[in-house]
Amino acid sequence: MVRAICLFVLAILVGHSSCQDDEFLYDTFPEGFMWGSATSAYQIEGAWDQDGKGESIWDRFVHDDVPHIVDGSTGDVACDSYNLYQEDVALLKNLGVSFYRFSLSWSRLIPSGDLRHGFNQAGIDYYNNLINELLANGIQPAVTLYHWDLPQGLQEHGGWLNVSVTDRFAEYSDFAFLFFGDRVKTWFTINEPWVQAVQGHGFGDFAPGINQSGILDYQAGHNLILAHARAWHIYDGKYRPTQGGRIGFNMYTSFLEPKTDNPDDVFAAERAMQFLIGWFGHPVYSQDGDYPAVMKEFVAFHSAEEGFPESRLPQFTPEEIAYVKGTYDFFGLNHYTTMLAENGLFPYAPSYIRDGEIIPSFNESWPESAAIWLRVVPWGFRKVLNWVSNEYNGVPIFVTENGYADSPDQIDDVDRVNYYTSYINEMLKAIKLDGVNVIGYTAWSLIDNFEWTAGYTERFGLYHVDFNDPLRPRTPKSSAAFYKQVIADNGFPAPPPKL
Ligand SMILES: *[C@@H]1O[C@H](CO)[C@@H](O)[C@H](O)[C@H]1NC(C)=O
Ligand SMILES: *[C@@H]1O[C@H](CO)[C@@H](O)[C@H](O)[C@H]1NC(C)=O
Ligand SMILES: *[C@@H]1O[C@H](CO)[C@@H](O)[C@H](O)[C@H]1NC(C)=O
Image (cartoon, rainbow, N blue to C red; front, side, top):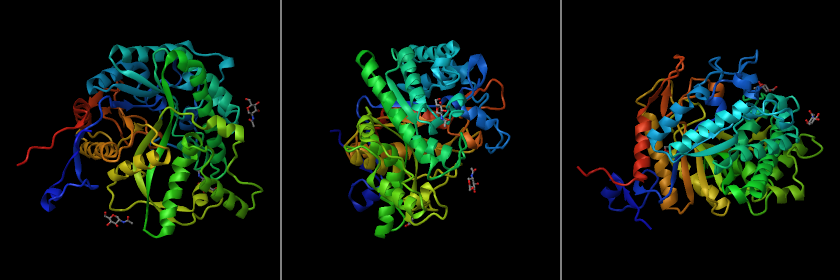
């Protein structure tokens, strides 16, 4: 094992070097550690109705008469990556990444969402061109099948609330493996099912804008889990033997720190982890499958209290539990921030937050970002990596998103450089000091893009995009140079010279 060198001024002063939260670890990542960057189709492609693409729920949502996007913008053009993908690949090559995580637009490939109504050859051509351009530049494609842009045609039949969507997703996945799996060896089924369930069907602030927390979020979540398992089994049984790739789920994770050391708050924080990560993680990654026991118990309790005849949390049959359990090759982990959890009852019933009896908050001392939900808490990253590894028996973790939001048009983005420095270092500590098996890291995002309901008011890119210029020119930010150096060094090999 490579010796871990902990250096910190305070450690030198007091004459010891145990690695505390605020110490910087100079060391490198394991050989073969994968570095990449990511985007998603709706956020970058534009060309929303070009060359036979069908409408998605995000196309519908941004064109709604009711405004949903803070700056009134859309992803109609976005970064125009549908036309400028070769520029994006050149940026990736400049960074020196080994892979690029991007998503397929389901409705670009299958306009109605239902393969029985036909597919779109121009969509196949586009992704073939992108994949071939990546490979020609020595970059592995790592493909997300679903990043929230359900074909509108399926929404007309209830979308994620209709279990038949799992059949459509299975057919679409099979189609994608068939056409692209000869060259794509890393697949992700569904990005952040929690966001699609809770924000799409509970709070209703994301497409499809359905607002029935504590009921429809759970129903959508149930079908998202079944759909994930369908795709995994199709890959595992039909394509893995000849294509030899790997496939997993992507979880939205935060770390939940107890607000006080009162046992009620300590339990609330653990419960919050189960309601956030365990909801989708436990059925797939745990030894026993199914939803977390604490989640089943708390939702059933509040459902009864509110007069529902049965729990609002759907039940898996024993056959489904067996079918879903173990459908992973790795744990895809997206991480941005940490919150405090306090034991308490959210006033609105029924609701997902009330079910968990969790009152979330931030510590006001944690630095803010341009996104209200994102505070800079680097140590939470190390803790969440440890939590997932302990909870799921040392599962290999693939960090599939991590990044920082700032306001538009910052080229010398020192806050993002500081964020990446500290977060990547905490990941290094999780690997080197705690023994967590992290296999790769993905910076979100390659380029500034359409940040959902925040439109273009929040930026995550390593490269700036000028959205006022029809040519959408890309410009490297300071963070691009920083990340390029981390990749070249495979970490942080040397401490700065002593003065
Ligand atoms: C669910 O989907 C099936 C197949 O598309 C359709 O026949 C049925 O009407 C849908 N159910 C609802 C409630 O929309
Ligand atoms: C959801 O419904 C609640 C209660 O009717 C309402 O207060 C809230 O504004 C709604 N939110 C959205 C995003 O529609
Ligand atoms: C908030 O952070 C400060 C500074 O680290 C710390 O002293 C305080 O205990 C924290 N409060 C909570 C509730 O976590």
